[in-house]
Length: 81
Image (cartoon, rainbow, N blue to C red):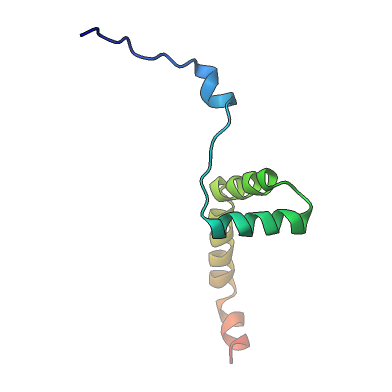
């Protein structure tokens, strides 16, 4: 049996090549509707969602909420009554 040499993939391939994203029918419909609603392509909407997901925005938001909760605890307590 002939031994196969390992496949060598150029380093640029992973940075520049397209990716297939398999969505359920419901996910694809929701993405299509959102893209049409915003007047953007499905790709643009998906890329923006991914960018937001991987950003540190949620951590900054949690930190800001916690800071307000701590610094303004008395005010928040009075407002809740």
